[in-house]
Image (cartoon, rainbow, N blue to C red; front, side, top):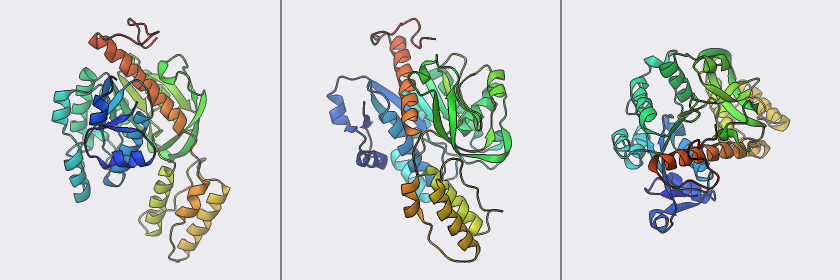
Length: 349
């Protein structure tokens, strides 16, 4: 069912423009459909703050026909912000104190930029741990994205991420490793997921922590895992929420930094993302920049060459996640179950 625009966050208008159904609170009140309240702890840097809102709101809004979704964005005060982002957050985001008081059915925690090898040295570490601890005791399920997964593995399970010799960057083929779990029900057994990270938590580390791996790539490692109970914490190492252009924008950023002498070398192409024509365009552009020419990045010529091979599966997994949350919260609140659901084992595990 649709997202409910219970505040004036500009993301709602952008999603309407993309064809996503977004209801006003007045229209939502007229429908006899259960509400689900989903928090978004958005730790992304300023340049990606609103894009990350749209990506996760879109996935939740498209995911499942069983509820109206009230999204509750918040962030951590220790994260560095510019004036524009501070104004956006002050106007449209909620405080953690308010969220803690009112409660959530589910929580999504995004990644973040870091500046220290050890996550525990980051300024956001203690506030993030406070949120994770509260969610463990009070939220039906928390979905951790990328760095948030690494933080929970380190904080709760003593498994520290490992820096890789090369960046895990691109669109990688994955396989479902346990098709019995409801999070991957009716999902393709082989599908793509984007990744963009230097660090990795391995299958061996997930298993040493007592966690279950559900989706894995031979090249990129674990993508999807779950806590021992099957739902309390869901772990992503990849970025299924990414837009088609997300990796292009990352490549452009790194290319321009390299051209300005702020990176030691020009970036490699993200794996399985640019086709041959796009690679040829970028190779020519890079060589001309290295020769000293001042050029405009050929984004308009590259966009038609990009394919999205991951969104449908991402939508299916998020839909399954929301469905599991719905079932468990029904049990906890003594509400009637959907047909075919066993109240004693709502996840079918």
